[in-house]
Image (cartoon, rainbow, N blue to C red):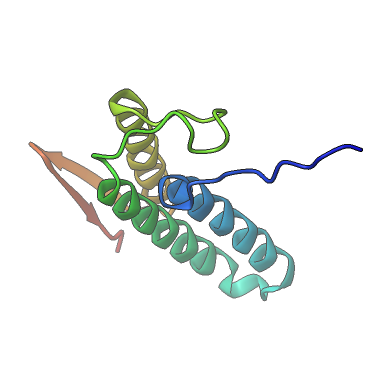
Length: 116
């Protein structure tokens, strides 16, 4: 008889990945069913909100290290946290650029100015 081993997932550590995945699914649904006029603003709102929530979740779990977050297939350590936060910040800046806004980086601050 074959025994089934249930997967062990640490959802707290996997939360940033799952949040971005959920945002992508919601974005596809909006693209499929939203009226054409409200699509771009809705997509931008969903993308920015998803990235902000994922970054906040990542910052909340930044001191947690695990090699068994998803049955030893995903490892979270300092370098992984740095890479994920860099990717999320880059995606956030990319979303702002695609919306037509102007981005100004002044030291550690990031300013996004709406195009008029």
